[in-house]
Amino acid sequence: MADLEKNPETQPEEKKSPEKPKKEKKKLSAAKLKKLKYGGIATAITCAVVAAVILLNVLVSVLVEKYPLKLDLTEDAKYEISEESISYLKSLNQDVNFTVLMAESNFQTSGESLKMVSELLERYTQYSGKIHLSYIDPSTNPDIVNQYQANYSASLTEGDIIISNAADESKLRVVKIGNLFDYDQQKYMQYYYGQGTLEDAITGFSGEQNLTSALMNVTDADPVTVGVISMANGQPIYNTQFSGSPLNALANTLYKNGYNIEEIDLYTDEFDTEKFDMLLLPAPVNDLTANGIDKLSAFLYNQGNYDRDLVYIPGFIRADTPNLDEFLETWGIQVTNNLVLEGDSSAAQQVALSVSTGAVSVPVAVIAEETYSAGLPNTALPIAAPLCRSINLLWDSKTSGITTALLKSSDSVYFSEMGKDTSEADKTPVGSQIIAAVTSRKNIENNITHDSNILVLGSMMLCDANLMQDASYNNAQYLVTVMNHLAGKDNNLVIASKNLTKQTITITTAGVRGIHFFVFAIPSAVAAVGVLVFLRRRNK
Image 1 (tube, one colour):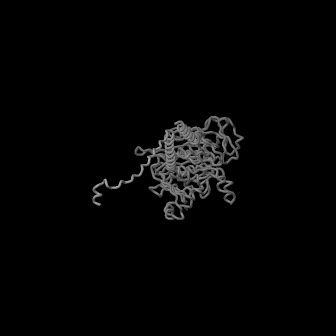
Image 2 (image 1 turned 135 degrees about the vertical axis):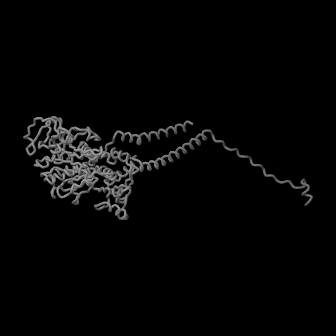
Image 3 (image 1 turned 120 degrees about the vertical axis):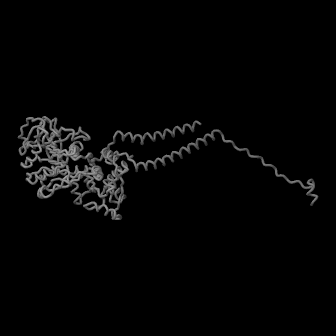
């Protein structure tokens, strides 16, 4: 064994397995390399596009929740809010809570009308980071409801929208869902008695006006309170048939613009100057007693402090009011018994009034003093002036005070004496007549001017419900602007209701361009890129 290990030559030879021929690696042809290359690129592009689309979808969803990116193509843009509200929201510097007393899922799925309210509320949060929206189910959150109820005199019910100042929740307003809509009264009564649906009765949406006005009120450091002298010893002070609707329209418009409104009795309630900033005397059918006149005088004098206002609106039905007439004359104003009618058909305005069955021809008022109308959004809109009484200014000097004509008629008007048939009137033109005026008395103390004012409007019909609700007329905007000037309020926001009776869809030019961009431009661009990639892959 040892010899064998030492002598390798004596060892048997190992058998070697024959070597296998090596397989040569197949080389890819140039065509296949190009195909693989561009196929990979196409796959990568496809993956990138899919990822980009997913990312874009997520991003857009987030942005839509935070910013107003939805395109509203409905008639009258019923899901959008006005530029006036947008401007106010963007300038808001106080935190405000919008609390809806209903579960969010129920609120958003309870019909088209509540869907409109939901969309509107969403818009408010998108235009201002100061608006905080929450939905509270009152059945599961009674403590929160009770917290609000402590600062609200009426009963809170499911569906109420509570707008409150976050820093002071005692400053709140409650907007009822039913008050956000306008109704066809006949269909509403049918619904009330179990026939038809509430949706069928709705004709308009006034949600924006109500919500924005509530927002303005809770953020106003010193809201103006108006005492409406609607009663005299427990009886209506005005003719309910002719003056009730215009008075309600004016009071609602003021309320929607942040005024606090409270009805009071001429004789049984006190005109507390600590509580009321302004009084409204609407078309009394009977003369005021000496006590009533004294209460008005004391309110305006305000123990020598002035800074109080009275709005007097006479009716167009003849009423003998010698005490009231004498009181006004001591302030330099005389309201005549002459109704101002338009004699030139080309200068008249055809309007449908709430007290008439068809369109009637009425004078158009001209703004005579721009100081009181400063800030009026659109001075080109007409101010319809039906059945106004002419007004005379009695003071020739400024020793007692200042009287100012606010609205005048055209030169082509004529007089019709109250209580007589208008067909008997002499239609001879009497020249331009004053149909709205203001008189002021001032007191200067420590170089600070304090003034009390009486605003006299020519007729309750200036506040006719149809004219106040129609955005084609300036009646509501003008009256709010003038009263804001008297009260020292800066905010002026009259927003017309949105008409919901039409079912057609109209699209603005900008909307058409947007649709073309998303429906045609983007798909065309994607198709063009696809064709280009296909041609390049085919030719390489």
